[in-house]
Image (cartoon, rainbow, N blue to C red; front, side):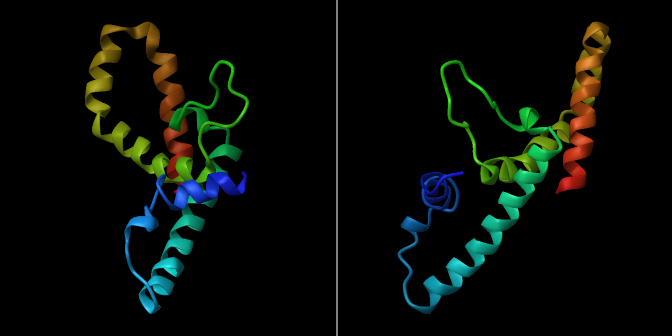
Length: 121
C-alpha cells in the first residue's frame, strides 16, 4: 500500500484529521490515538485479506482497474460493519432462503466468511 493511500485514509477517507483545527498538545494526543486506531484497522484488514475473505467486505476487482480499490485500513474498518449487518438481517435472509433454496450454498459461504471475520475482529 502506497503513501498516497495512507494519506487519504487519515484525511478524507477515514478520520478527517484535516478538519479538526486542533494544535499543540491536543494535536499530538489526537495523532497518537489515530495512530493506534489506524494500526488496529489496518492489521485487521490485513488478517481478513490473509484469510481470503476480503471479497465479502468490499469489491476487490473492477474491470480495467489495476490498483486495489480499498486499503487494508478500509477493509478492517468496514469488516465489522459487514458482520453486524449480516447479524441484523439474519432473519430476513433466512426467510428469503426458504423462497430460493438453490441460493443456500451462497448463503452458507457468506455465513462462513462472517464467522472467519468475527474471529479476526
